[in-house]
Length: 227
Ligand SMILES: N[C@@H](CCC(=O)N[C@@H](CS)C(=O)NCC(=O)O)C(=O)O
Image 1 (cartoon, rainbow, N blue to C red):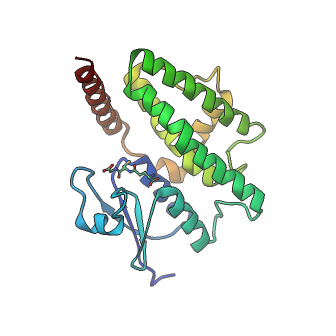
Image 2 (spheres, protein in one colour):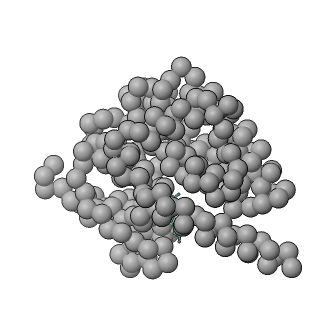
Image 3 (spheres, rainbow, N blue to C red):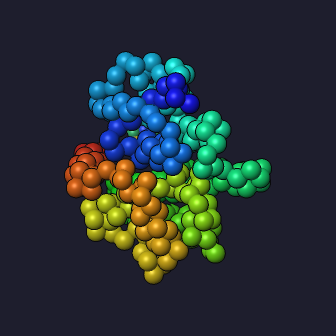
């Protein structure tokens, strides 16, 4: 293991890249971090991920892998300690289902609720609530999505624990109210409190400032369209 070269291209705030940080840390894999700026991507990053040109990219012994959920599975197959996926095919399939559901259904609705206002925001919020109900249901009888240990689904949904309260502070909306989603609310606290997760959380004030300006820019663009 000692002569392996593992490099992670990330930005300081990318929630997708944080998935990879968490997985590598949980597994105790040593790696080098290369910080990118989305507005100034390096040629190296673009060369490694020419199709999407996004972070994260993991480079293992010179071989690049892009797309966070794909990288997570690669990590789990390559470093066996602290497994993220079950050894049962059906359990593995379910975990992949929920990870995909998070990215395809939950994330876009919450992002719309965060970046829009008025009717569009209301609609996005009600879509988010419908989708979050499925996650609440999935947590019944479990502390974490992975059971007692962090699994792929916890890592894939980790951005909820990281960003929802930031979005709530900026918009004044309650996206995941405790009364409506007690299990999910508890999961967010439990997940955020796990030392490996806590220590790699980006600074909250920097996140608030960054996402505040993203929301402002998005609202200004919408206002421009309506003129
Ligand atoms: N589906 C991708 C999404 C990655 C992504 O959207 N990364 C953002 C940062 S959060 C990025 O690199 N954006 C650069 C750009 O859009 O030009 C994944 O799961 O890795």
